[in-house]
Image 1 (cartoon, rainbow, N blue to C red):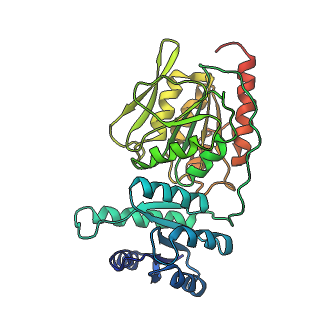
Image 2 (image 1 turned 45 degrees about the vertical axis):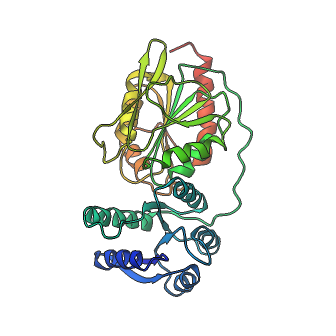
Image 3 (image 1 turned 60 degrees about the vertical axis):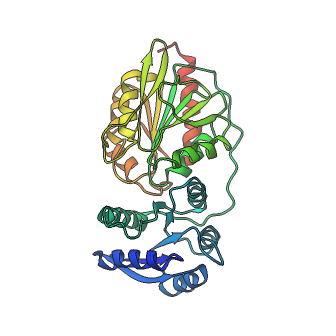
Length: 348
């Protein structure tokens, strides 16, 4: 199937570059380019594109406003073209909340080195977007009041995710109580974005959420997000768990890698762990979740219907790594139920 792509960007140079990349790609068709939201709206109606690449900063109507209207009227997979700045990260996270599937940095015009890598990356992301599930975005449903749990330093929750994961992780965390066992999170994101994302979650959740720091002790009531471009592993120090950040090679094509975090937890947490693999492209985390499952810990995978991209959970299910497969809105209640069972027993 040919993927019909519409490029929306106020920069003529960016439109030209992205247009050429798409025109030359097998299995893709450039249906048009638009310099603003008004032209884009007409092209969406005329061509019904399968994927839209969308700039955030545009004249007349900004990209976020256009995206909001698009997802309410005609849900379409959107790939945001973002600047890798703090402001760009904040706007991109807002775009993901509004229903965008993924994002990519703006290409550096005139920099020949790395353009081929950029070409491959953006084409991969367009193909991912074409396979993604997008839904009409309505008023967000507020989370129910979270149930209290007994404070516990030995129990842990681990979450791995990629494409679509920023919203899926939020859906889990906002349903966990302030005194939940510590949550360790690896989400595929670039540097800077993880800092902004952690701050955003911290303002929404009962738990404290922060970007993880090397050497810090893992405490109940806190969620720790792996920083962009660093692997996060968990080590045991006496009765405590501590975070170690590693600047080593990519694993499963990613840094941070879910597999790296999961495999470290399988060694030190054993049955005191509840781990889950959420929406994402590829298979990072599937092998790690399988290892956690073999250690007797409780494991979950997000179901296909609620995933934006059913890649990572699908691979975990194929490996028999998930004890249960649930829609995203049922995962946190099930985690709380399982943790109560663990808390009712003796220390493991």
